[in-house]
Image: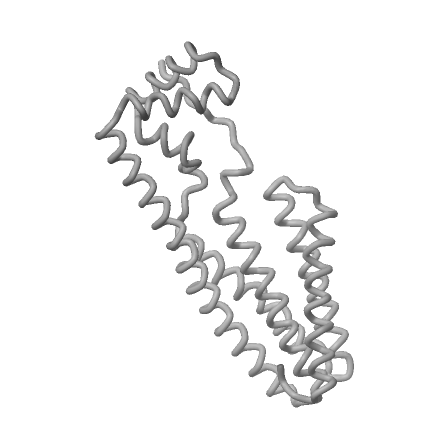
Length: 231
């Protein structure tokens, strides 16, 4: 009976997790920074909400388009490399076996065993073996443009909603403090969740995301207060 590998690894989440964290972080920081800058420019609540909603829509669409184009370029490169490997497998199979043999020798196998492994893997799935061990392309890490675009846009919108809700909840007299506090809490939560899912150190992840978020808001608020305009 064929044994199945059922052990779960964190890298299985890497494709969507990267896009999701990037989207949520960008949504929180971008829209919160925009709102803080507008608040510092002393404009009305309606103008603040319009700016926040516009930032949400524009940012989500930009994230989706940017991720799709970026990851599609990666996918095109992977396809081109695999097509080249297929041609090489047809033209010079002995050379391709030797390539895999050398790769396995570099990983610690002796030549005889490395050659046996290379030949058996080539018989089972030649292009799969070369894609994985020569090119570093695996099913887990393969580029997925639509998935990346969907998660980036969706999580950007979810992140952007939080500072907008703060504008609706807090009175104008403490709006700046309320938006800032909501944003910092959101960044801490995002850092904790992403570290939990990815198996990374929680404190390091939280501090990294929170620090850069606060810095971005501070710079934007300073520009808004200095020039008295929306930035």
